[in-house]
Image 1: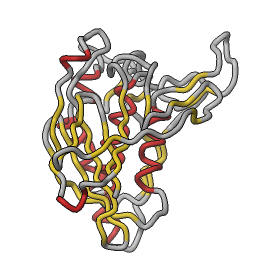
Image 2: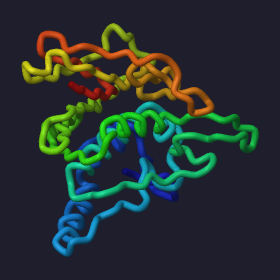
Image 3: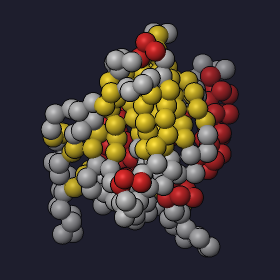
Image 4: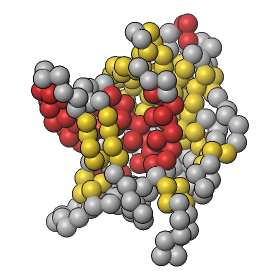
Length: 241
């Protein structure tokens, strides 16, 4: 989505790089074009190396909650195109690697928030044979329908409005996502944290990942209330019947 190499001028930021869907869509356009071109020849289109910010990521962008939320929106949008597979680039001590499993240069093993984006996407596409359709495509909000064998299987929504951990949690703004009546008993898995600017206190469906990359805790699902689900700034939700 941007570069952390030798650039001139302003560098990447969460707001202008990861959470600017106009930026993401402008870059994905090329994959859309090429995916359609290869499909006409019967060739699968694979993105062989990708991630948030080039040159191994950027501090306080690729290694905080914002990267997990971005990864959900990015993969969901790519899945609506003729992209058959996406490979995320990683390496030891890289700022965008999901997990550092060993002590390296006095840096202890730890989980990067990107791990949560991977967990979310894995939950969406579990079982395979899924197709994705874009429902909402706004500057800071995206929503997707996920089908399995032609039937609606899940709905994903991503709120890419900035919310920092230093703000009053009571004032966090939410966007209401209206759902079909038959989804009144759906379970909602929420990817959330106190803010997109930090790496700690992130949960997905109430669970967290420890330094050994083990998923800890029991799953906790939100419920659909009044036919709607609220998606907070800097959050993503997975709705499943």
